[in-house]
Length: 385
Image (cartoon, rainbow, N blue to C red; front, side):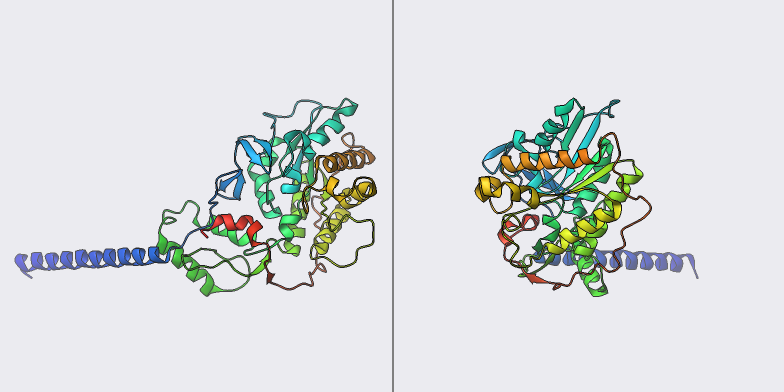
């Protein structure tokens, strides 16, 4: 081949490469523009009030002075309500970290009337040096609480973990929490995360793959809110999550106690007339606690003792959120339960290396159900309506 022919061949190859790149660029741009018309979006909190978006836990509490259903909530920059201790625990100091959702966050009550503050006052009434940290977050499930502990909770060096998680896990909603959180992880840190085409393609491939487990959840301009929902956290996974929290606490030398929450339906002077969909979640908490020999404070039992004297309206702000009176009663019951186990002098540890046997723990319930409380769902804040 002559020198001129070789040069011509190189020019031809260069032209072909440039042409191919241009074609690919045009196709990519066209695909991106087409995908933008579909408008796939990822779970991200849209309303910035007392709740704000979080990159791994979907949402957290907004810092500062926030409106809280007719009262004021002071939120620490960490997202916890109220004061949060800094640095390591001092000799002789004990720290109690409360995990839960809106019932224990203190929806509708002032800072001084939350369970955390009431409990701190009672625990210190005998000269102890105990700080109670309010780690409960509006709408939090065990899926979110586990991440909260990994990201912030364990670093606070709690000596006791008080777990009141149940209502949010049990809730029937549009999506499982594991799906939503897996979605945020799948796109986190990816240089393509802002590409509509990449989002659309990832969702399509995930659905095509099928199988069991979590799935990527994206929202498009044509999406409609599902009428059939799933449990935010299935009961078997809920039990496993509780068990993991207990065993991780034991490995770290942290004591654990449970609080089984209540609502107006579970507080009654008469025998229960019907079964409720949340019954199996209470059974799951009971089974995990029993396996690890941990105390459970049954709020329904505590409040039933005062029902005849005070009435439901004095015990609940609405269907499920405790009043200041209820929080004081619950705090007293927690104080008594810990005293029976001689905490903090004696630790209340789970079995770090022995998980709860959940082989026979199977929920006999439908896999989906009509969602009748969509307007109350925190998940609705994650997507455009």
